[in-house]
Length: 483
View 1: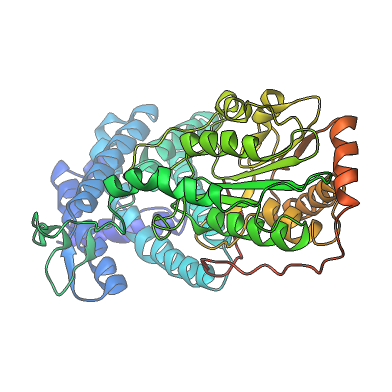
View 2: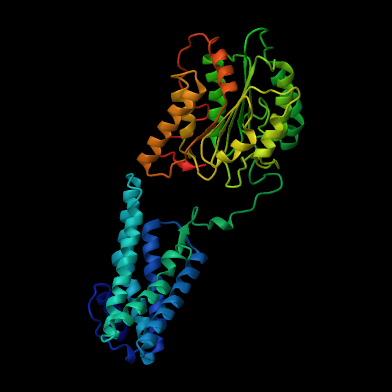
């Protein structure tokens, strides 16, 4: 017991950058294994204080601690080997376990609690700084101890300390950070709860998937049948809004706002169709799928006058590096939409040459080339190799959606000018948040610009349309998660 306590004190001295008193060659393997239960008890005690009752033992956390002990053993023998002191391997490994115990109590535990307080007060970068400081302290400690083992070989000592740090710091950096205890519900382990019966599904759906698919044609026909016919001798605007991802309300909010904005301010009242993936609206609105989009555009082409009218399609969803728009309403197996797919849906009969297509998604610049046309305006919220920002559970509208729809198009009726205002505004927000610029893109032609000018001349004076989310998601800041 005396030897155990003296080794624990030596671990504290090493953490405080002082010389240990015990000669490592005197230590036997049994001391290393005797220190492991001590470390386990310390970790369990800290976890119990942090969690409070009731709690349960977490197997993954225990395995992580045991894996960390093996890595400390490897680091100890690595230091002993590079110091050419193989007789001290068990002693150095035991000292590292003791130092880990002291470091957990004096450094890591206070740092975790301080990081939690900082994060709850909005200092989101502070935990990373604390983590880096603790890891750096462990490296300094190993470097000083290695120098004492190899006083005449400083370069070798530094190399040994670096290698030992890479091995022994693995539980902090590479291994799972599962604690040895986890919260329990009423003292019963969460994973021991009774499994749901067949009569009580684990995840009750807000809709019947088969019925939803059956209803699509009727919902589409009803929505298309309600569209006003075009006005002879006058350019009319027809709008299709597409909200692809049901997991986040931000996309449906944008589609709803597109309907209100263009109906009120841009003369498209009665000529807007919304396709939305939202479990709460499956009985009222057609789904945002490629099939529905293709069908709707073909039907609208029969209503519009291609020589006079303009089509505007606004798509909002997550985007991938492969330039695919996410189309998702779990558990329905829906196809994703790539540039060629969207171009195919827009290839109507008769053709609708005068069109504005706005794709608001990460990597949406990859759609530009596929959608170009002699009388087409294409706007994307990002470059082909860049992300956009503003989705997530904390956001009600994306950054580009707010900048373009809410801010810019309530100041001007010009799509081109609205894009320039939005691009500038988004760049300011990204710079302020330290994000990589998304660089929204635009591709236009003189033909579509002239057509839009003739249409704008027919618009009456209209007030700005305030934005209010149909499905509030919570405080919009911070809403800068990429999408």
